[in-house]
Image 1: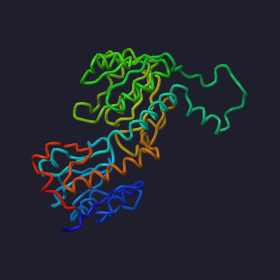
Image 2 (image 1 turned 30 degrees about the horizontal axis):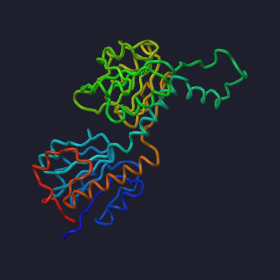
Image 3 (image 1 turned 180 degrees about the horizontal axis):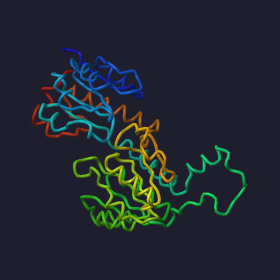
Image 4 (image 1 turned 90 degrees about the horizontal axis):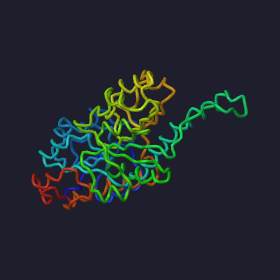
Length: 337
């Protein structure tokens, strides 16, 4: 049997490479930056598996180059960077890494929420820049209380649910919107109140986004939605940058439609040097690090590697995105190990 060949688009935490090297020939992009589109196409030509990141666009052009590609494993929960429909048509298995980063992202969501409400980043800059000249002042960097307020969660999947569970400690009222409403017993158990998106935006002091990026959710939050929010409200986004219309958000922050925002994701990453968000004081900006804990990132790496090994062994992978591929090309036909 031919030993499977795998291309990994970036160095990953242990134990991903160790798992892959036990069964496969592994080629890794050792640079910190992602491979260019041209490089990705060149590297996958003779590969049977691709382990990619959300920064890698895996479209029909990439798949055309890899005539024997059998599995695309993305080191992420989201998979909008992979043309799943095209992969399925070609009999290529697509896998992801859900679940393991839930707690890390939920924790970070609350970190952003608290940070923007209590102006923690501004306070840090204030001290470091030498502006702190008076020991204590009644009105210095006054923020907004979180305890007892209302949070609106848009998208109640694993992460949205984890954010809701953490809300209990702050005694906040939790509203949620999702395309599918939860069973009543689940709402009661978690003390959740269902609202339409419009109602949620109007009632919430904090709006936290946790939906995948799809055609339906692209610019889900635009000018119309931002104008529905309270002037005292904050927007938090740890999902995907394109869920929010950046131009509309900049306008909302500059003109005071909302009080502030905290963002871990952007429509273009890394953020452009001339992006006006960089100049606004009422927004916290993080470089897409919501899942950046040692525990979460290592487990993601392990799962991404095991997904590949499972497919190449002719076994259903733990996290298969495109279930229909099983009918297009049965696992027995992609088995190599």
